[in-house]
Length: 255
Ligand SMILES: [Zn+2]
Ligand SMILES: [Zn+2]
Image 1 (cartoon, rainbow, N blue to C red):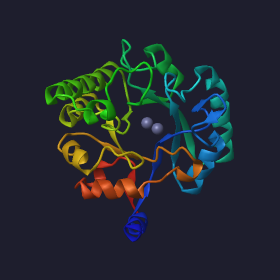
Image 2: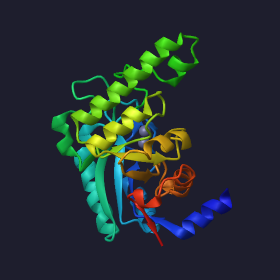
Image 3: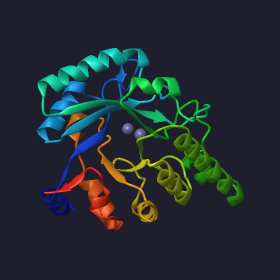
């Protein structure tokens, strides 16, 4: 496997990484993301990426971003681009899919704070989705489980259709969903599907479903430490195993 990943790195490179976390994903004194903006930028520049996005967790997450910090983050991003002039750094967010009118913990008015918004499902207080552990390991009737799967799917579709979301992050992780319905919604809304090797989903089976829809894929490191910024070989291996043409992965280029 290690050798396979090295071969992939020789053949392909990553153009950008639009899903990375920093110390702005934190709860009290605990830093969920370990690096500063400048650390992620340094790692991205070292790996030859053309661009990078800082996408800390949405404000309702346990480790959620404090929106009041945004001017400070913008200043740090400007300093990072000054230090690494070849690198473009965007400010995004990994919004949570929750039960709000627009289905996210970032309101339509707050979209303007960011260059773009990614969204994904996490275990957050405002979310009533029933995730894998509760819904699928419990000895509940199959009919009930199917109902929960349907509800989870509906919530994702609502978020996709109510907002301009750039990337749906790690779909299917933490909550069982109907991949066909989610793929169709991504197709209709032009949302990119993330291949994220940090999580269990999407896995090869999920990707084999997604690939039948007219959607673009994107690889993200979902780095919580600077050393993981720009990681892509594991995700690329997953995509290839699922039979996805690398030309459909928007940030992969053949060397
Ligand atoms: Zn996530
Ligand atoms: Zn993330």
